[in-house]
Length: 408
Image 1: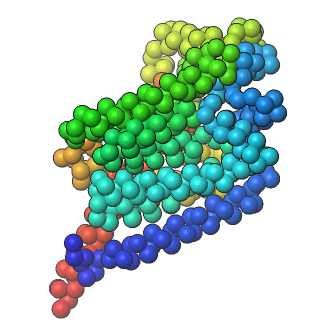
Image 2: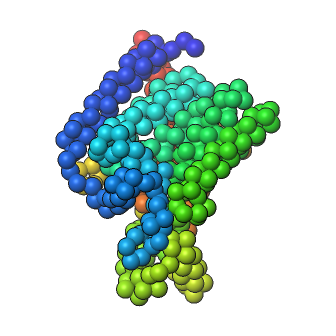
Image 3: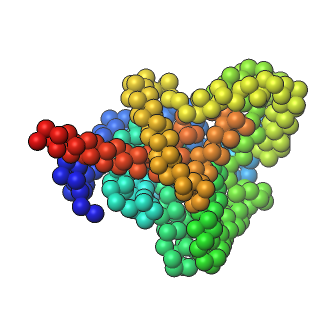
């Protein structure tokens, strides 16, 4: 394709992408070097603490003791795959802080995967625009200095999706295995696995491709269940058991759409004491279902506040709040425009790209909304936003050509 004389050339766009990537990498390195000694807080501290307990005891997470629940342990299994990555870092490097450098590597894997996916599915200038949009996303640097699950899970997820674009059965099997690892880190990755298979079916690919991918994911999940059963003292499970507690956070007298902990009072602790994590999950779900049954109108009315929290900004990060508002606003508008541009394909394979994002919103309604819960779906939005920016560049070029012709 020949570029308009007034449009940004592919070479210039690639140079812009390279500069963005360089600045993006540098910012992550600076953040890690400056924040390495800052203590972890909230969920990140819980992950670090559980990993350190396992590393000190010479076991993997969760050990039989860690599935026992109150009074000495959490009431749920929390991102087992992530915590075992932290355990591995502690064993290999003597510190959990090695995870920060792994987060930067994860970011690079995500970026490369997004580039390869958009190159395969869209072509043209879209891959470079998509890469720039990911580098500009503030959440990509917010989480590098934390022991959180988002970046490692996304790295495995989008690497799997990039590998799934290949036609060889062995590569598809490997892609499925990688997706199983992503699910082990964070269960939400299963939405992307379903989306990948749905995409292949809608593209009317040879059935061997989705079958091979599904087989690889199934084999990986079975291996993980076997590993978890052995290390936990006989409990069969795949990943986290946090659905029940998150449902209760979003279904109680104090809920308002985002996180709140007022429901976790002494009476609830007394009811959970002596139960293992799986029994606690059942209690949490039972309480949530009971509250929803008694308060259906209030629960439905909370849907919009939950979605607003999901699509909003993390107000605890005051330094980046203005830029995050700006970035997300532009991204959402560009996504809507991109969906309009690709509207003829929405009824086909493109619906599979929107599937994880739509399910993420549904999960926020079922549980609770949070900005970081929306982060894994940002690449889905970028898939549509990138063609919108490409269209904007072409429209600008056409306008300049028309203006130049008129003045001549």
